Image 1: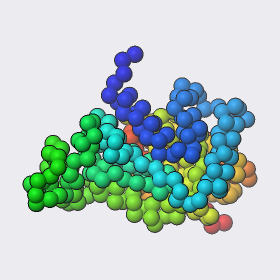
Image 2: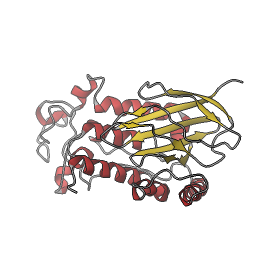
Image 3: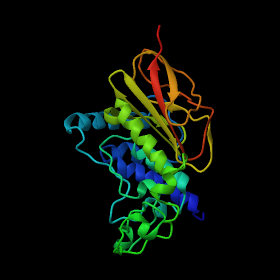
Image 4: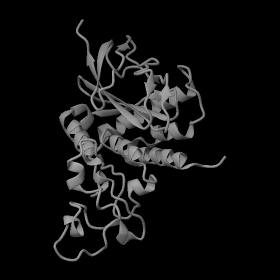
Length: 285
């Protein structure tokens, strides 16, 4: 079967998930390596693997000092994200959503928040930051050490600051969201099981605060996706839901005495290349 650019971009998004969350590699690798497997019944080997991996993740999180791991998408030696994704800005937004909702102290290599392009050799990965569309992109009044990238007229701070829907403003919203929500900023991580291999799901939890993250990595919408977990990840209750990122209407969540998610379907259809960041609030009795 011939590989398409969409296939390549989706594979790269999976790779970004794997790269970003180093201490949960075994969990996230399961989403990739079991791509053709159906959702398994409770008590199956896959569910046991998920429980074991979450136990390992929990031990590592307890043992490792806070903010000791630092995830990132790209650095000064790697092809920039937008270039690696074939210019797919929707995929670049999704990549940022994953980076800034997963654990750790995230780093953003300069220009990634603008969607700056760049490929090898290394000097072309380290071109001047694009501040404006003017000479030398506003980086210097002198001569820059490298010619600008071809996208400097559009991928710059001045242009994107004025566009509410720009990649830069999307990064800003994500950063503010992470800083204002302790579950996202410093909470525990628990991997969840998705009925669709193209959908990643995990829970961030800090005390009484919990955020469910569901990301559709595919280029098409996914319908009827069910999210499940092992026991004891939440207290038994009905939870009201709120999409913190996109404002989607999310179904309420009912958690039974075992404290697990049981085939929870947040929305009937998950939009392509979209992350749902869902705040869970225990409803009053």
